[in-house]
Image (cartoon, rainbow, N blue to C red; front, top):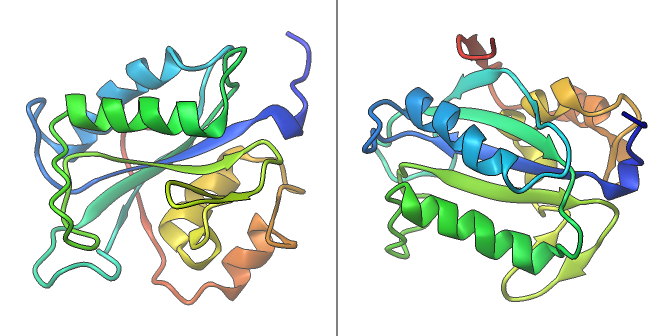
Length: 175
């Protein structure tokens, strides 16, 4: 396969901290990879899975499992159409949006970047406005992106060096 131009790549963060119809958050994240592969014109690149403390979540929130995937958007896809598909997948897995900020969830799919597209709207901001502040995004993202991948003027590695979040625990499931 020809090398895919970086400006065409999409990165999506995956997170879960509640058991769903498939069981554990890990089972949910592994299963959703099949659904996400259908949105890609090339095989997914999948980071290792990491366990993280809930960040800016309601008290008593369970630990999260996180990963990041890279996909090649299908012909005609744009950021808003992909966002709608991601939200449909979340709903199909049982995600309910109650309006509580950073509440526990069965599945969370965050569009981190869509090639080199930059946008700010009520529905979507790209690149993701807080990705560079969150180790649970940076660590798995850096595992699959090229070393020169830029976010807000710095490489992911440079952001990781600046990140003060606790170190993450890498867990099984990246086989």
